[in-house]
Image 1 (cartoon, rainbow, N blue to C red):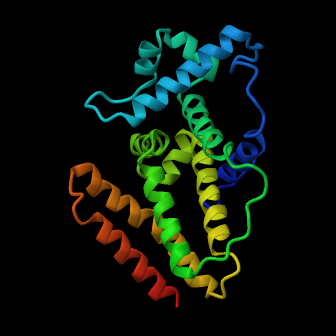
Image 2 (spheres, rainbow, N blue to C red):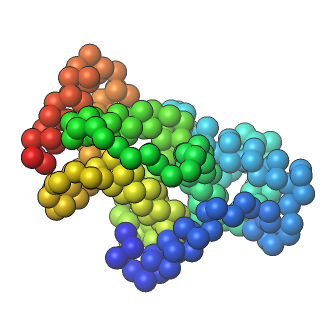
Image 3 (cartoon, helix red, strand yellow):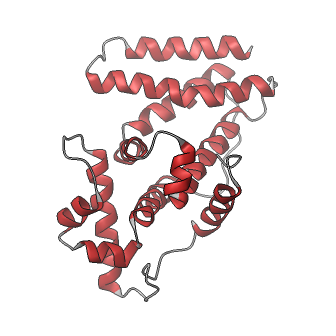
Length: 227
């Protein structure tokens, strides 16, 4: 995504730098007291829950405000606009996902097959968490073309690009130390989330009887490709 425009690249750099810093001020620049921080946390929790739940009612800032028991003005005060709300949601999901990882990651010694299966399992499990479902739903809400997301929601686009950066880091870690073709590794890294997401769609539709077989077959195919 960062190659699409200098605007997206700058937004991604700013987002990555800003992630570790706890939010203490509103979008209006006022310092948040305890009540304000609690309101912000409640809005984010409601937004993630609404996105993660399946339902006919579309997720909007007004719906989030209503279910959180506040007004749209409160949402504006906290996040500024819809772009600010969505980027805050992605930031919160990022913090939940990566805040649980203590210190440097340990070295891996498993076989290629074990690591590929581990990568598939990690994506499979994550996509079925509230955070994973929320990210998928949010991406579905946004324009289909990335260039349109960058134009309409530049900070949200940067946040999604950073999530892709998370995946690149995680995949590189899983494959570290293996003597494999880097071009093929990059191809597998690009394919694997989409393939697992497709299997996840089958899971949501209720076709679950053969999904374990499908996941094993996917692992076998990727290992064969890499070797």
